[in-house]
Length: 122
Image (cartoon, rainbow, N blue to C red; front, side):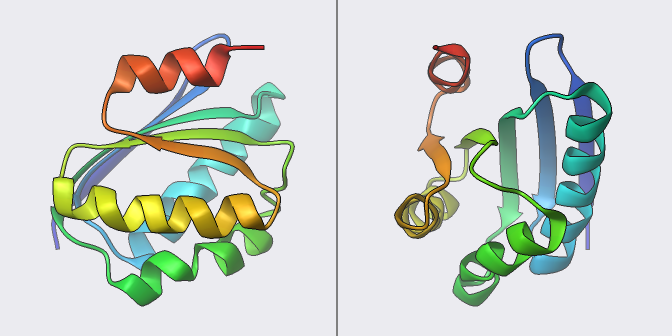
């Protein structure tokens, strides 16, 4: 499985880049690092930039609710996520609906700059 990630504090938000084959395990690895950096920097605005080479299964996508509970991701986090793989984007829109219905502040975008603007607004 080919997968790379990088999580960086950008001064006013956290940028999380993930490239490659996505799964629950890679999401767990990514959110471990995202929450570590968020806590260290006391910053809870997260911009995710994803490039998927293999789609995450529907169940892995749905299980993000449990993943967020495991890492203490609460509605204080504001999450803007982008995905360049159009097939994966549709799954993320479904995940967005589930999480927003559970009180999370998150939105999925096709464009990184649009996502950044939404994330940093307010």
